[in-house]
Length: 509
Figure 1: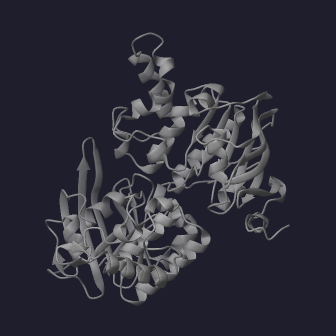
Figure 2: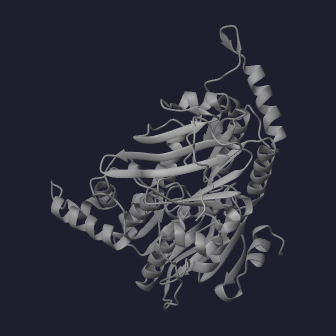
Figure 3: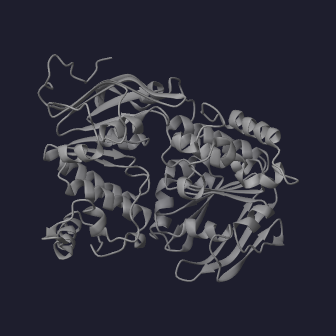
């Protein structure tokens, strides 16, 4: 296959190229993350970098942005050989990165976050008035309805993502790296982002774009590079690929179905919610989910979907309404009560709420079931290890060992560990909030197969997803929410993208 990357014949890049990375190698303890990866990016283009979770995409970008040092290979940016890269130098050269996992300073304002480390000064003091004024001009130009003086904690995840994008634009970078930038933003905000990308391209800015969403790849890509298991596979113009060819190159195999939904027997009502209300958040929510059923909850970002399941799980209080489990009233003062009764929740933000990133795979898997492994004063390490290995094999968790630190694993494998943690318990209802957010097509297919397997075992599953193909592909029944209320309910046979969106935008009355 023809490689877009220009071969280097001298110390400078070929005309039209802003970046070339050749033969990049990087190892971490027990893991060879990158082994001879190549990437060449042209000015004024969108270069989409694709591969499964764990393929090495984020590691390659962290090397480019100066967060990691390379073990081997060369990097040239705008004709300059980068042999002692660091984050400050990368920013000074014009390389800006928008990370998939956001880390804003929540108690600071939008303006303070955007200008962090490069604040305008008046003598020895920060010029807060100028900083806020310049930020407001930027936000207004981008069409964002925020105030520069707002605290970051007032924003949704989508809002924080948009502020990160604004920060990169404000740096006037020559190369902007976007790692899963649309994983937590609405279709309207995606359209706004794509307009900004088009504007950046028109001004000669190069964009490296990482995404697992096939529709996005073919909407915005000029060139595509594929890496698999830390190695370069192919690079070519986007027009050289179709979806099946791209997936095959990414995963090294053909995936028969990303949505392996099977018809399974639907049993008795497992969970029943009536009139659930949390003032100012959601109102009069009523639904039920049966054993063996996958109930999809659809709606736009901010519709109140996550807030409803948080209340069921005991993370937030209900002001009114009732919840029943197996026909008996369910009273939960916190997640511990919900877990004891057989309700598990895989949250939208796995890193903040689902995992202890500094601890091992084994410790994270057994975390919610320590009573099971410590009937007395001491932990039964043998039983814990056996259960961990069983979960590792069943969910196909890719890790060097059970002792590997979870923070070093890919997003797809981290998500499997969160699921494994709950499967060790006696679970009746499994709540999955954005279960495949930021996960590649191979891992998506695996998680969807697990969902079908759980349904066959009689689990009642509630799935929240912002991806309509996932909602349509995996749900037996779909509840649609809009501004904190249920606006529609659809059986699988009558569900389409059009009628879900009609309910989600309240175009149907």
